[in-house]
Length: 70
Ligand SMILES: [Zn+2]
Image (cartoon, rainbow, N blue to C red):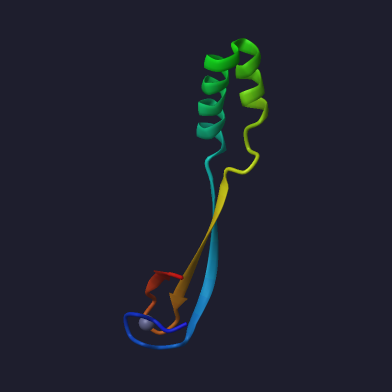
């Protein structure tokens, strides 16, 4: 991988894990409540944290310190 800023190929990759469990769980619970009532709300809350983490990979240039997406 080449740095878009300085052109150096002295770069390394880092990964950041993003988690949005709470917001998604609450949103899901509300949807479940609207569709199925209180039971749906509980099911929505139980199902939170299933697949709401997203991995982001970045490259960091060792030469100029620039951070850029893959
Ligand atoms: Zn650079």
